[in-house]
Length: 121
Image (cartoon, rainbow, N blue to C red; front, side):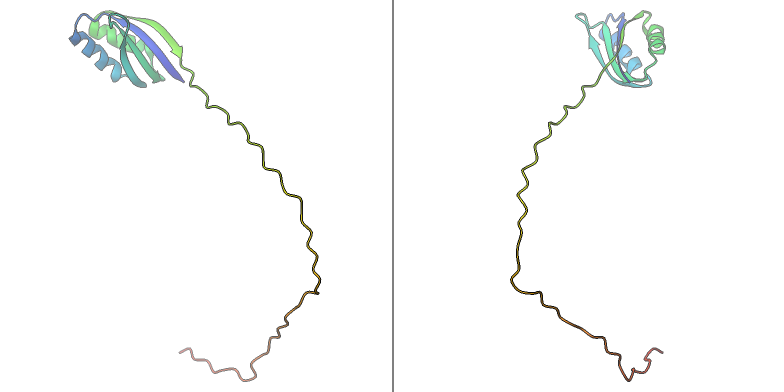
């Protein structure tokens, strides 16, 4: 189950942003992290099986303030179902009449009257 998580973090400078991104990236299950919001003070995290409480606690330890704003499941778009194409019409069966009777070839197995001596040594 993919999750989309938005956490507001107190980030005053570029160093704080870098530290917040580093903490979020190493968390278990995180696939991507981006800065979000008009002041770039929110982290948008996409991942599977992310422990949101543990991530927020790690951010609080590093940056003093972090609040969880949104945790939602991301639904992946289902692939479009292909429309079945109609099968081309089958041609009617053709009947072919033969004017000649079928011809057969006969074969007969004949045993060799004098078998060759064994040549295996």
